[in-house]
Length: 159
Image (cartoon, rainbow, N blue to C red; front, side, top):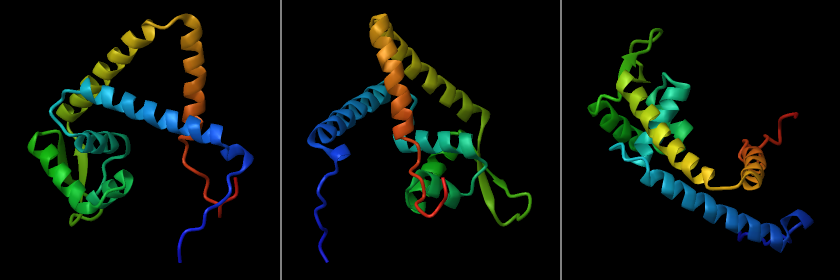
């Protein structure tokens, strides 16, 4: 069976599609600029995994792969490199010693803090170039963007 084209709704008008296209391009460019200000000696996959472990850890490799939306071999390789750099360590699960959980080390936390600080400093300098009205509009847009990025509601769940 092929995919069927669906007519756009009023909310999916050409102007909404054009806005989505501009937003996608702007977010991609912003992400690229932030990566340039990273300079921490780790790949984007490794930094993402490290941040996820910090936020949700300790995690098994399977749990980490699920959080990151990648295949287990990708996470295994990334965690191996992070472990080699002393940024994470594997610890036995207290309830089941056969299971290892990955945790961020002190060095890993320092690296993440330094990375975030550099990126925030870059954005702070750029935002300081804007006038008060533009910064207020951007603050309002960030609130909307945060709502857009919230996970989609599960259709089977009640709101």
